Image (spheres, rainbow, N blue to C red):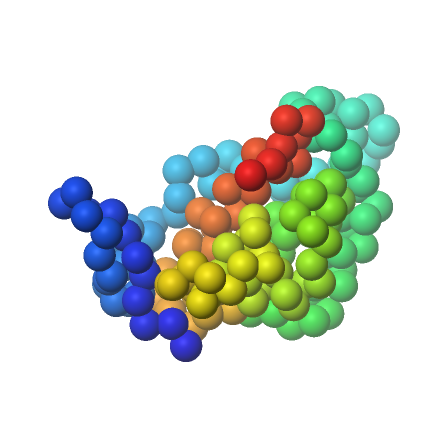
Length: 163
């Protein structure tokens, strides 16, 4: 279990207990999450091809496979992950894009256990600190840090995506 998170404060890097870090920085939904969550709700309510095209243009996603998104969401719900529904929808959305291919095609378990979701094969030893999504679930406000980290994936799914 992770005890500390490395942050930059007062012109230097310091380690902060993860409980304190989450309480201080992530007690609220991250900026931009509500808009993304509303967009995902619309995505899961698509009823026709016209709605699908409109949403894919809004998001400007390179690859956008609605069937894969909905299948993944159904599978994630069956797996009983303890994430809130909006997080499961976002993860499912990522599976319907080229995101996982661009980051090396990790398994879901590898990705959920990664300390850097955008570079999932880097270890805690490589980075010297960190937490995985599965680690974060153990803490109050842990779901909010997962939401924040999920927002970092958006730059990977467009035509310019990466690093």
